[in-house]
Image (cartoon, rainbow, N blue to C red; front, side, top):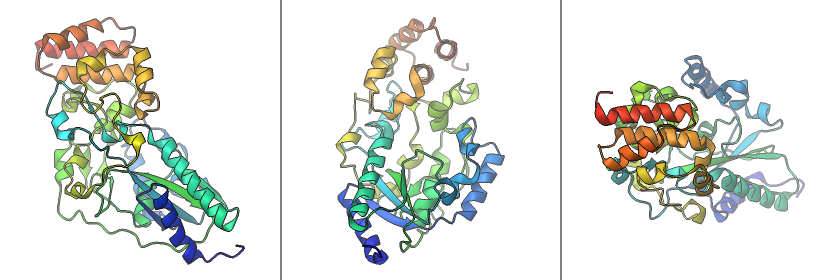
Length: 354
């Protein structure tokens, strides 16, 4: 097909996407002017913390054609990830002897899986119309994926800055195909948060400083995943037993009563990470950590930060001989970062005001 019917092609792309395992496909333009202004203001306020990559590429993040020349449309896709059979999130958070891992990281790392599905979608399009210009992304390049997904009709950006769909909540991953195909676009999603402020109120560290305004420097996901150094002392007690990420703002969102469980076997819970004890997780050797996080998003933080995070959680747990013994076993750890957080946790065992 030298001159495809783009209306028919857009409809087919959405159908093929669902057949490949995506929950929904939408199509957007590349115009992100207001979102670019929001991004630049956020960066100017240093709310990105040490995530230098957020500003490294300048405005390429908000100008798709600058990132991938020739782009005129963005095919946006979402894929549900909430693993079936996982223990209830609040149940884990209510037991301070267990380690809470963000729902998205309980199974296999999504980056490669989503991008591979996008490649299959591109291959299917090529099969239909011949070669075309495209590039696939899944949180793998400077892309304003939530803004693009909103413009493609996949959901609105909630007050907690996550994307929400009124039929499917917010437990889903996003991916994009930047393309030179002039496909018809979908209507942007409209906001349905209304007067609800549950996500703002529930945030343990008050990182959501206003509707759609996140100060990453206070966000537990940033502190436990992105930050590579010492966690600020004043925030450690607020982290509770969250050892990798934080889902409170999504757990409390009323729209997630409509969330769909994932049908992807790769997103199933691995190694009992939906409710393992802090003592057991802290006891992993580096070899065990590398083995048990193979193919997992957790591996990217490294073993030191893994122990750092668990030490903080153990410092926040009720006093017990098992936890104290575990902490003392790491008191002379070769890493200064680990030692610092272990010492803080041990001090908490004897002085609750530490």
